[in-house]
Image (cartoon, rainbow, N blue to C red; front, side, top):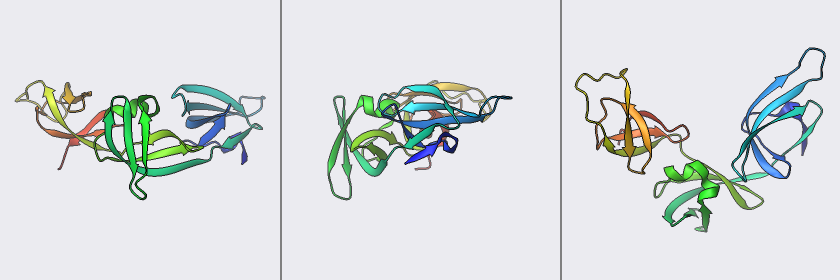
Length: 188
C-alpha cells in the first residue's frame, strides 16, 4: 500500500530500496519558498545500519508487511540462538547478526517479540526491563547517596553498566536493555 511521505511516523517499518527499514526519527521541514520535505533517520532491519534520507512531500512510500510473533528464547549454541513458538512448539534459529546488540541481553526462557519480513526474522524486541546479578564492582562507599556519582559494574551476562555507589557485588538490579542503563534494585 503506497502512502505519501508526509504520513511517515516514528516506529513505522517501510520498504526502502528493497529492504525493510524502521523509522527512528523524522522531521517535517518546509524551508522558505521551497517545497516541503521529510527528513528521516532510518534503520535497515536486514543489515542493522542507520542512515538518513530526505523524502519529498510527494514521494510515495510503501509500508512493510511485518508479522510479529512472541517467541521464547531457549538456549545459545555457538553463534546460534534457539527460540520456540510456545503456541505450536516450532523452533527457530537466529544468529548474532540478526540479533545485533540484543544478543548480549538474552536470558534463558525469556519471552521476546520477533518481527518477520517475508517469513525471515528481522528484529527482536526485548522486554522493557531485565533483572541481572552484579558479579563485580567496586566496594560500597559508606557515604554513598542516591544522587552520588556512579561506578562501573559487571553483570552476570558480561555487560558492564554504570550503577550508583551504594550498589554492592551480588545484588540484583533492573536494567533497561534498550539503553543499557541501571534503573533500580530488582524486587525479586
